[in-house]
Length: 187
Image 1 (cartoon, rainbow, N blue to C red):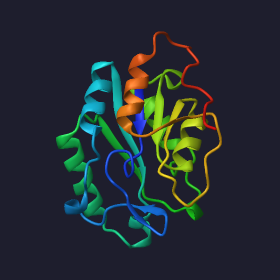
Image 2: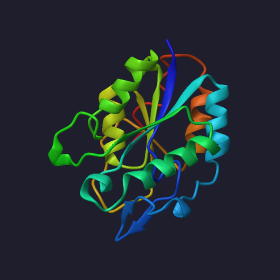
Image 3: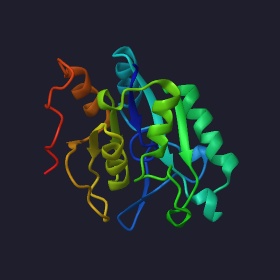
């Protein structure tokens, strides 16, 4: 079976726009700023044999605050310039009750079925509680990039890191499957 690193988009791959202590997606392709170290991190993960799959909530499309073609242009750009294998997006809002909107694990589970991914040997990297819960629910080990947003905090287990590059280094450093080095130090 294959293994993957599932990645949130805004705050992990590209810079979020933070207003009032809460993160928001960039408004246009021109506003997309890839975070420092992301390119190197994705290359490291790919060389280590992982699929790099972005799983992102983009509810602004559903609410009319963002156009679908703008989000798709951002995704085409990221796929063209970074070592990403796929971008999966949920355009629903919580009230839609879909399985793909994080914190539900639908995006990860669908990707695992389609690509033959072993979720227990895979990781989720996110910067919000929704990402952490989705990764946990899918059975992945989880990294939390903690920007100190003024919102709900995730529940452990997860490993707190400062960036995707730090997470990639920790994933590379694993010496054997089943090692618990990356579990449960979310405090």
